[in-house]
Image (cartoon, rainbow, N blue to C red; front, side, top):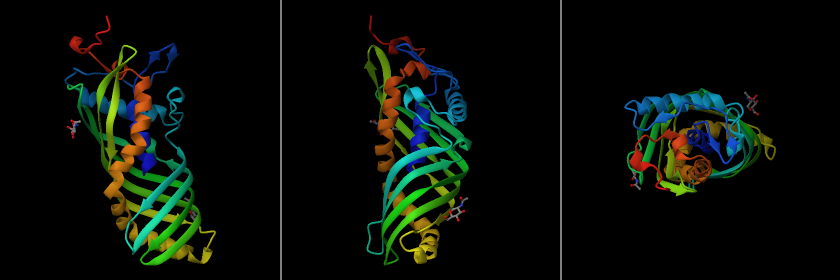
Length: 263
Ligand SMILES: *[C@@H]1O[C@H](CO)[C@@H](O)[C@H](O)[C@H]1NC(C)=O
Ligand SMILES: *[C@@H]1O[C@H](CO)[C@@H](O)[C@H](O)[C@H]1NC(C)=O
């Protein structure tokens, strides 16, 4: 789920055609005007178009990879803190499919306060499939678990709200957005987990059954601190992209008093 959040956020970070320091980026999506009365609808279209445009090839100039599939080389996930349920996962070479089909439902933005610019949107994704290698160690239902192998996971009816806010900073005479917080907490309608276990093949069915029976509980345990985790993973990437792209190339500034006082 972490990777899912990352790509959403990075995607939201770069929706404009850009010319800067001799670097030219191709057109990705509509640039919306901050003063437009229809700004939120414009942003909705813009984010949706961006997801489609960059889903296959990403944006190389900003270090953003393909969205569909979205590849993550390595990621850790620690779930639960109790005697009955505690498990640490290491995932490798994870590919996630279906994110280009993400639907942006409603956008709520407020860019009027340069010290707190906010962007929020509701999203829905009918089906997400993810597969990769894993190792796991821990306790489920008081049973010690050690496992290693391949896994795949189908998520359906994923919905949630993505939120971020930040403040305006000036860098080389241009205004940029510095993100202070970026979070999302997706709800998953259904979840199917399949895996192989090279270490104890005879435990594979049991582990799979435990995962499938307990996913709601596992997922709830994850949401407890998911917001902070998402923020830690996503914010640095988002800032990397935003610091390369001036704000007025993402949202045009029509208000003259907000222009850079560089003269
Ligand atoms: C910025 O605005 C958001 C949403 O309105 C709010 O939740 C947040 O606390 C604000 N952040 C700061 C630093 O004021
Ligand atoms: C998911 O993993 C299981 C176990 O390795 C495998 O049998 C199944 O074919 C995989 N499903 C897909 C769609 O790749």
